[in-house]
Image (cartoon, rainbow over all chains, first blue to last red; front, side, top):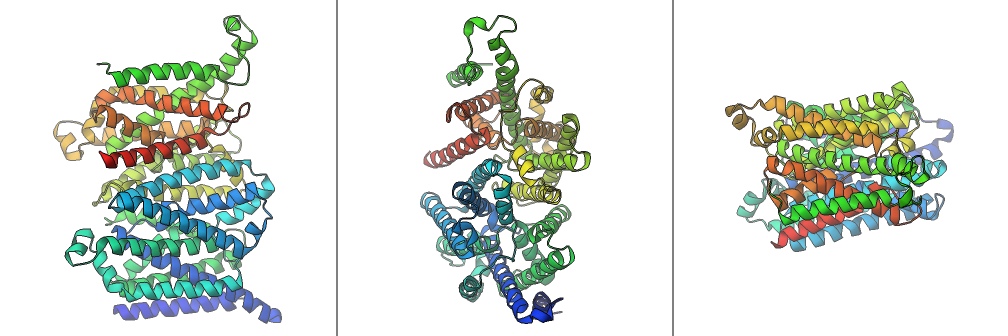
Length: 315
Length: 319
């Protein structure tokens, strides 16, 4: 099978899975209402798949590593810290928590400001990714220790609210917001895709990229900013799904067996749509609403991570 | 053993901090009463203050020595029980023991925490050996990814059995519950530390790689296993008794090798002291900052550790 056919096949699979999300076991008596609700979920899935898929591919290309995901450098734990702080300091029923739009804007802006600030400080002083990643790890640990202390102080009722933010879900999305986000995410994706040849060069590593005439520093900073915005979108919208990016990029790589971004980017996103839809149907329709989708994805992704690392020689 | 000025001042500071730690607290201690049998002051010291100070010292020693050994055998300065799966493995073990054995004895919890922590560190080392391209930063990143796998397993368990908040609460570094009768399990760290002292030279050598150590007659796998057992014992026992204390195993060994060089055999006896000193200071802050209440030592360490780390990062850039 040629690569193009493989991508096409993935496209068909993704389309079928979205149709499943829209129509599987739908109640025809309230069809109009139900289809609207499910349309919102389907667009949430698509936005998440595009942003996590492309940000992970970009991040791994910049860092020349096929294992790590961008959320590891502090964004996931910062998101949880914001949520737990708002619930603890203001109230679990404050507009900042219950209003999906406000909550998104709050989280998105803090995540982006934190990320840009970190880039600015680290790139002004150092010339490598190394210190950036290192300080990301450190801040991640700091945020986690703050989260664990504050969440211990929450009363059980407030903790229930906080717990709903710990796990990604597509059930509390706001329609108006989604339209804007789809536009933003799609245009960023088109921008990234239009530069796929530069990304191929970047993937060769720092020395080769500079040899081939790429403005390495500028390229890294630009792509990191895109990674930051996309990760912030998906985290602020649905919450943390740490292993999704890892899972879909490696599925894409194994399936296509190519590093060309022209094919890799769409394939990874289509895998993302497929897995999220599948996971969504599985958790919502079969398990009942008992288990959050991100737990299932983290379990599967985590097991895949360990087996892949132990079996093969990666990177 | 030569006593340079930095070494000597660390030791002096350590003794001052130890004494201060015993006498900081809400309960009034009357110095004249200390030696009187069954007086209130003696009771407070024996049952609350001393256990607390001893656990801080043991945990500080254990975590920084475990960090140093871990960094030595994995040949990476940024590896520590927190930036690998050691701590989260212990947490998963604890979650498993709670789900399947209910409110069992500390001993069973410890057993589970130790086993899973040990297993997870073995997985980490296996992965390290498989990866050919070991840039210094990717090793801790992979460690963190691995840690989040174990965390997601324990989250899954806790979520299904509805004790997520309780589980997370256990892992918060907290010494307010450390009183006599509840902390003695920590003593298990002491033989592990002694074992490290004995094998310090071997750990230095296996840091140079499997081929080299086999060449000069050191059993590589045997000493790696000893090292991993030590790391797992320290991770598991500190997580169960005092909770998660991040940064100690990461920062202290780095400061020590910055000050005194990389020779493990020379440093191993000194590395524990700044570790304990760091914990004693952090604990005193946590007890004094909102006196007469106290905040979690985990939070104090998190903030102090971040500051120190960034300081090292930026200072290292200048020189």
